[in-house]
Image (spheres, rainbow, N blue to C red):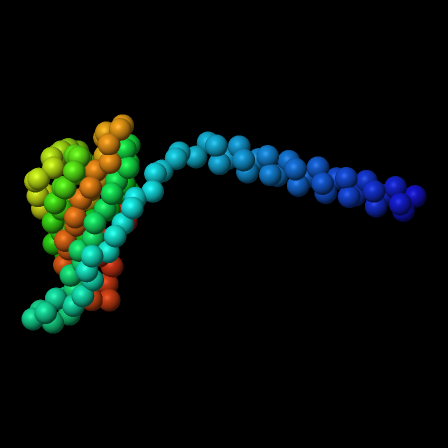
Length: 142
């Protein structure tokens, strides 16, 4: 009798494990795919001559269809588009597309979301930003 109970228990555990893994796979399939951004840090250093400030310069490659998270910056940010087009959506409902060879100046504390609307081409940008040492340079927004 105990052997039958033990066997039944093992079978029940195995069935639950298989069901749970199938449930996880189904949940993963329902989540939206978010392409990864390739980021290359070019410089992160104290801003010489300005106490308590730092500068960060990064190169980003946004894959086709990229949609970034909503965020804002507590300091100045300048974005230069090297290749492709960068589309910026603002909290106020505005949308601006910056073409290759153009510079975009972000509003300090302005909530924005970056996009690459192309379905075939990556967008390459260089971001230059200044902020306070020891504090975040980008803050997630709702």
